[in-house]
Image (cartoon, rainbow, N blue to C red; front, top):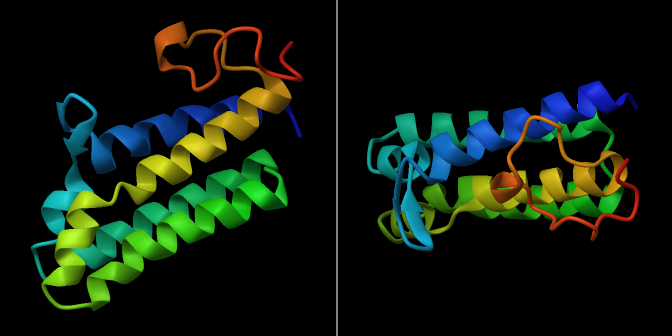
Length: 136
């Protein structure tokens, strides 16, 4: 797996994290398109599933480990699947930041194998300097 391809996937995951779950941030909490669209019939599910599939595609493209991939699937199934339950499901989808959790898992896997992209500021990295086993 090329380092450039993995770093491209890292940046795509960062974009999905922000758009899906952190358009509006209040301390450790945030809401994004995924949470806002959950209250719009069909649109919320389409966005949630589309974002999930995109993240899983990026994970495969980056060559993540099976453990990371399965963890991502779990986070995204809870996120997208919760919308099938009327009202309560929408509340869970609004609060559960599945895209962010899955994207962070993807980024950590990439940082462990390839390091963070060089042009990403340290505050945006998921691993603190020196903690990555394989960083270059």
